[in-house]
Image (cartoon, rainbow, N blue to C red; front, top):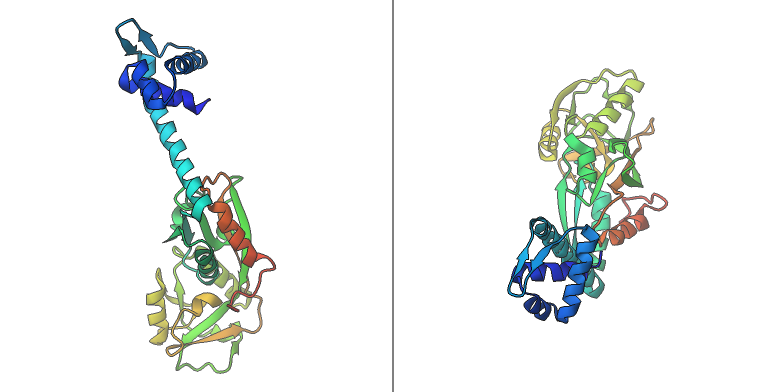
Length: 302
């Protein structure tokens, strides 16, 4: 459909005067009449009734009018965003992260912000209750999360960003020494974890690892937020198992971090987005993320 036909239709509908509509559209009256006739032919209905004195919009025209206004509004918004992007990289992206995704997105967002200062970034924590809707429903442009958290859907695109090792975190004054620990050393320990509802994949990975070592997990407390978890661990209520980058956000004066010596604890992470994403700046962000994701570089060397 020619957008100019809709522009003329709205102008005529609002003025009920072909001459005034032509003036508003900077077109000749004959051109406006031709566009309206072509639009009527396309829909197969009469949109206006005309006499020598009056122009009256028909019921069919009244039905079309709000849709035409919405289409023109969307078209003009798209033009504005694309022009801003072309002229100075302006726009906005909304990024969702699950509670365990911090360092890799931070690195990408830092780079992206420096390269495109005119593009604003909104950060939100992902609601794990409806992950498919979070990715494809338009609430977020991009979502960072463990790979196994991504729902099966042909409408979702993903790129593997990195593999995150799990580490053991304890209070500074604990019985543990050195830089590495065996998982078997957790057999008699009380565990303090992020809750299954807030971090389901992480919780599952930790349970599976412990069962591999024939350890019956003793989870004394679980928390939905990191601040409460860090307070619990630092006060000696138990030890925790966390992604390495997440543990790096804790206070080194209060907590100690140990690598796992006898197990592969890597958890693959991805960035996911809708295959039908319409944000014109989306490609710029994907390009930035892929620059760091390629080769799965060490995310701690930055």
